[in-house]
Amino acid sequence: MLGWAFARGKGKPVSEFETSDRIFAACAGAAIYRREFLEKTGLFDEEHFAYLEDTDIGYRARLLGYENWYEPSAKVYHVGSGTSGSRYNLFKIRYSSRNNIYLIYKNMPVLQILLNLPAFILGFSAKLVFFASKGYGKEYLAGIKNGFFICRKPENRAKKIRFEWKRLGTYFVIEWELFINVFRRFLERV
Image (cartoon, rainbow, N blue to C red):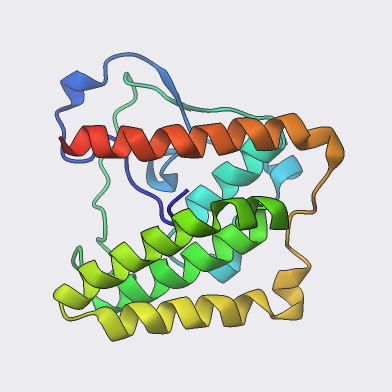
C-alpha cells in the first residue's frame, strides 16, 4: 500500500513463526510453485531482472485466486542481497525502486492506483528521505524514473493485468490485505 514490499518477520527468531500462515507473496528463494500455477500466472517477468520478481508472481497469483502460504517446517537457507553484496548499494536501490513502480503499474487497476496514491506518495517520500540520509537519494530517484520509463515500453504495457469485473471481490480482498500489512509492518517495528 505504501509502494514497497517488506519481508515479514525479517530479523526475528524462527520460533516466533511456528504455524502455517497465509502470506501475500513468498520470497522466490524459498518458494515452491506448482506447474499448473505457473501455466496460469505465467513465468517470472524478465523485466524485473532482480528484486520484486517474487512479489510480482505472488500478486498475479492472488489476482487469479491462489493463496500463498508460509510453512514453518520447511527449512531454507537464503542469503538476502547475496548477489548485490550488501543491504544498501546502488544496484539494489536502483532496481528495487524501479521495480516497485513497475509492480504497481503491472498489477493494480487504475482505480486502485488512484485510491492508493496518497499512501504511495507518503511511502515513496519516506523511502526517498531514508535513502537520501544514506547518500543514495539520487540513485533512488533514478530508479523511480526508470520504473516509469519501463512501464511505457509496449512489451511491458502488454503485460499489464487487465481489470476484470469478475475479480472485483478479489481486488477488495487484496486492498484490505495491503492495508492490514501496513499496520502489521509498523507493529513489528515496535
